[in-house]
Length: 155
Length: 155
DNA sequence: GATAATGGAAGGTCAAAGAAAGTCAATAAC
DNA sequence: GTTATTGACTTTCTTTGACCTTCCATTATC
Image (tube, rainbow over all chains, first blue to last red; front, side, top):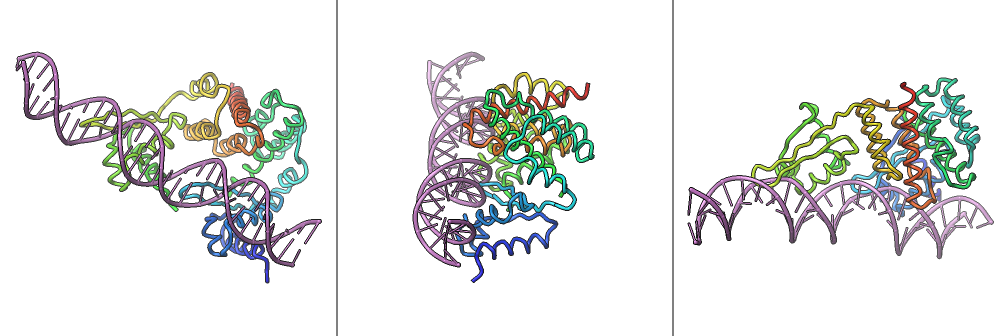
């Protein structure tokens, strides 16, 4: 008896393959279809469609809510995926973040204006009055979130 | 699953685009047209045509009453100075920050890519596990820092 | 004729109900 | 002992309805 999670994963992958790498679905609908608890869907998304595996999830609650699954284009973005998966990690200093932004600018991944916005966001002064390990951890989240934004917006 | 609110928003936007940025309508008439409760119109105005998104609402009750929707048209630099000096302050919610970014995009102050970077930066998930007043205060710093970056790079 | 009540025609407010998705800890399966 | 599954509870967003306020025109009162 194949595991439910695997069946749901396959199902979603089949839908993704028929799409342009982006897909919208309703959590409850899918749970109904597989006759499982709605939170099962979250489990599958968390374990099988994580950023590490090259996916990005957006969602919205309330009436007309949805879950959007976006498959990232890994081949085209080796460097970005390296940053997300390995380089940035749980903490990053301002200097290291600035170096990465500078590098992205030089490689033509971002424009000069975009580099300035990113640099403004990861300044130490933005997270004042917090212990530096927390600062660095927020900064890591910031970098990863902005990178994810850049990665997902081309589709 | 088209949301009613979105349909009404689109409808109003279509009317606005055919006008000179100002539009008068009757609440009950519009509610009749969409076969919804009149207060639904207020909800759409409050959530989609807020001041943060660049709109201003005037209205009048009684016989011959009306709702007037005005698209604000401020000079870009003035608008950013207003944001920095008055609007953002020490704290700002994710929703309000998103509305402002949406507004800046609509005005052409930032590109779509830039708007996505900014939106990624001010997400709640970036500052997880902190009390919400601290979240909002970091977010205010973020917004101000990014705006300063945009402002200074043009001079 | 001037003023005061009145009724209908708007729009406004707010809380409750409804419609989704998220979280997390307990349990089950392997 | 790790991975799956479930369910109770939470949060967010939307929709509705009951009740309130304001404005105008008409009628009643002095």
